Image (tube, one colour):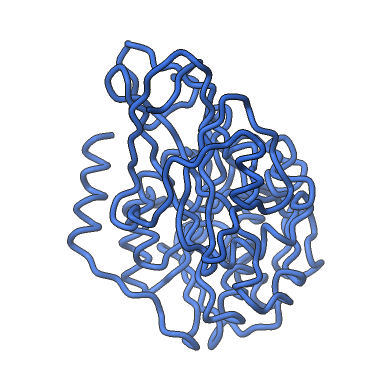
Length: 359
């Protein structure tokens, strides 16, 4: 694991990749040919050309061989000048988002991945920031999933009744959204899909495919990225020593975002279905302990703790007008009490138990 993470760091330092210019064809790379036809079909269903608008290519001509892990697939995709990747295979792990966050976000990349984990993901694991996790409606769901795609979606060439096909279909549709909205970044694309998905009004629900069933046409009809709802960062938590909480913050860098903000509550806050002001957060019992954008070069942040009271941490996104993203269930970390046993840096969240407060 350490060797693999070191390799990712070296990739990030050695390679300088620039996203495609606005108006250029969007290039989608499929991990082998697995799901290729669904991605091609999705582009055609959306009314775009697979020769001039969205270019879809496989990493190899063999279905499932050789399947590339995320780090090697990144290099393969960049060699093909792709900015969106799709892997229709099992083995999703929520740690991928943190391990690859910097290199993907800095270079304008997104990776669509089938939600078919080999083991249950930790309770409260957030939907990813630079990945997109998806399954077929009626298929497996759980912590960290982001979307589902209905069976026979759009009744066209991209439709599928398998998780693999649904993953590639979503990747094809996301590439179409990017072509139609060239000034949006991938976080904007994800925000548009989240805001128009079936669970948005009631909030993220890991038992019902996260933000729920996608609605491509409604997402495509949106025009102004500044009007898209704010979404909180994907954050996981661990411990360092006996008095410090360490956060890995995968910022949701949509165009509207100005900063990330950390609040502490003594009582567990209630998830909200609306954006919040600082006064509203204070009235809920929240206290702001950090706000800023210094996380552009480092997605780790530590907080020293002391005291005996329960503490709940909530990471939110803030815009330039002082509005904060709504509180989703995955935004709430805690209650927290540091244990003296050695704890791994990147979770799972259950390694921290009540209580504590910040100085």
